[in-house]
Figure 1 (tube, rainbow, N blue to C red):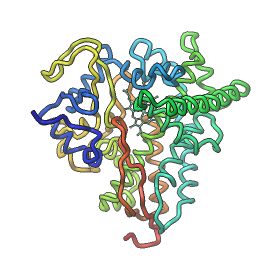
Figure 2: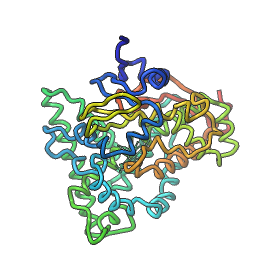
Figure 3: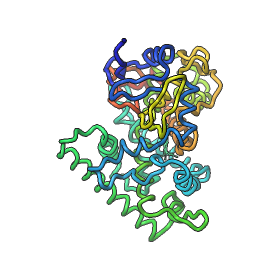
Amino acid sequence: MSPRLNLLAPEVRANPYPHYAELRRTAPVCQVDPGGLWAVSRYDDVIAVLKNPQLFSSEGMRRATCPPWFEEAPFAQSMIVQDPPEHGRLRVLVNRAFGPAALSRLEPWVRQRCQTLVEQLPAEQPLDLIDAFTRPLPASVIGELLGLEASLQPLFKRWADDLTSVSSVAPGDTARKEEIRSTAREARQHLTEALAQRRRSPGEDMLSDLLATRVEGEALTEPELMSFLFLLLIAGMETTIHLLNHSVRLLMEYPEVLARVRANPSLLPKLVEEVLRYEPPVHAIMRVTTAETELSGVRLPQGAWVMAMLASASRDETRFPHSERFELERPGPQNLPFGHGVHFCLGAPLARLEARLGLEALLSRFSGFAPRGPVTWNHSLSVRGPRVLPVELFPSTSTYR
Ligand code: HEM
């Protein structure tokens, strides 16, 4: 019997795609390490899992993020850990505050922010693009949405790192547990102040909309509201950072694509869609089976931890011809990278907007980018991206080397 694939092994992290292809070919539903999770790697099976929340429950997300030692776990009441019908009630309440009107209100602000950040980037010297651009952009957009002071944005990385590491804390590591609790208290205090400020003087912004929203006379409760704000902080940062990182990495790898989008920026939305398919920021999402079931002929027991592998499904050759090629011409949009079914990403239009405007601003000032050091990959089963992105940027007037 061949050993189980370890998805966190360094060689798999460095390039998981050949391993995903092997799974799709030989064992489309099978147990992998760490922990014997059930990996579901083919497109049709991933869709089957995500569109059946009765059988494949998001309770798995709750167990991973709300352990007993974390009494006030920030996601406990959020929609991402709920199944229908409760999930639907929360989603309807926030949909309006996050709809097209809110997005068009935000667009000029995001455009201006992209330009300011790009103007501050130093040319022709090595820098970490994550520190300089791809983190500050989503951090400031989330900060603006949540009504938090700009001076707090440098804290968001620690908040996100701590709150997403809950499931990997060793049972006896009391110091780390206290650190995470303390981060949650700190973030909660700032979010509470922002909410109180909007209650006193409502404006034209998402927090005010959330406070005012009623569906059939019902508002979000205070814990639901707080959980949602925490969810936005986490769900909207790391994912968008890596969409920008992967876009720049792929433009360095495919200079002919860079030349085409520079000559014709209206191709940028197509570029973003193909980056989402080819290098999706979210590789896997967790579910737990509520009853014994069968998938692609494999029996899954009740209570099985199932990983719907979005990044493998996006390379499924039965769905995407020449799936291993990065091709601008591919028909889009590519929605699976944002999930499927009731939990489809609430922030997908915002993520697409940030990526398009961020790349537009970068390409208007720089003719190209070149790698200036090796990429090391983060250590997470769900989101894959580089820890640092060392690059050099060449201004439009200089020759790209
Ligand atoms: C490229 C960027 C992004 C990617 C790839 C992404 C991906 C995803 C995925 C795969 C899910 C489904 C999770 C599940 O089914 O369990 C999801 C849900 C969600 N995302 Fe995103 N996301 C991105 C950006 C954002 C942004 C910018 C926001 C908000 C500021 C956001 C807010 C949410 C929320 C609130 C949910 C939960 C929806 C629900 O449970 O009904 N995301 N996202």
